[in-house]
Every structure is written in structure tokens, then in C-alpha cells.
Image (cartoon, rainbow, N blue to C red; front, side, top):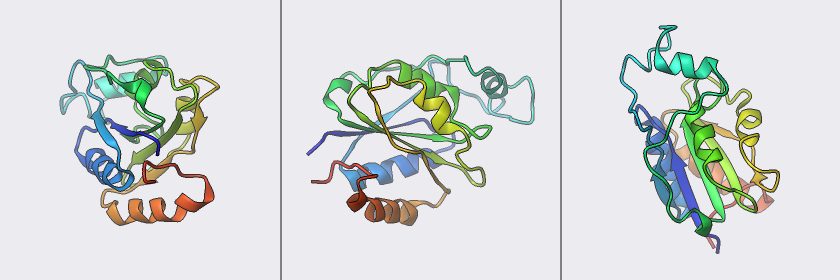
Amino acid sequence: MSKTLVAYFSCSGVTEKSAITLASMVNGDVYKIEPAVPYTEADLNWHDPKARSTIEMKDKKSRPEIAGIVRNMDEYEVVYIGFPIWWYIAPTIINTFLESYDFSGKTVIPFATSGMSGVGETDKWLHSSCSNETKWRPAKRFGANSELEIKTWVNATQGDGSFVSGIG
């Protein structure tokens, strides 16, 4: 049985809810990715070209600092990484997270939450933040009320090798 981590970044609570639901279904530990400088409501105003999130997302090299670390990352074989979709990709803090650890030999499975946007080029931008030895799975998008959708995804993909979980 592999040890599983569900790491997530959430500003509104939607991704957090999905991450906790997923962790319970795959018997995974949970880790919240928190920025060293928390986002304010003004920072998240995507209508404002001077908002922090807008500036970060326009600069693909932006790497917002993370407040904490996963102290036992070497123990995990499977790491789910959850986030909201911002500008059709993952927030750049997710790249910060991925670049902070060595995922060689680990399976990384990104999942996103969004009311309308798909995952866009998420896999391309995130996968490049990991080593070539990372076992990468395609990103999956969930809506706001995703419990049934997550359960269906877990159940439908467990037998075909495209999904990895901590369930023995």
C-alpha cells in the first residue's frame, strides 16, 4: 500500500473541500499549501491588472513563497496536488510547491477546481516543474459541488491504471 498525500492551495474553500473529500476516499494525508504572504480580497481581483494574482499569473517565472514545508515528503509515493484554475492554468504557487521537492519516482496527480474553466495548459506548465523521473498523471477538473464527481472519478479509474490511490 502506497502512502498518499493530498496537498492543496485554496483561497475560497472550494479546492479545500475537494481536497479533503479526495483524501478521505484515497486514505491520504492532507497538507494545505499556504503563501508566506496571504492573499487579500484585493490581491485576488482578477479584474484589476494591478492585483497581485494578475501580476503573478502574467509572469510565468513568478514563484510566490510558501509559508511551510512537508517535513516527510520522502515518505509519500503518491502526491495529489489541488488548486483553483487561474487564467486557464494553476496558480504559480503550485510551481513553487513542485520545485521545492524531488518528485523522482513519485506519482503526481494534479486536480483543479473551477466553475467554468477547463485545465487548459496546466499539465504543460506544472509537469515542467518536476524531474523527468516523476510519474505524471493528467490534471482533472472538478466543479464546486464535486463530491459525487470525485467519487465517480476514483471508482471509474482505479482499475485501468490511470489512477493511483492509497486504498489497498
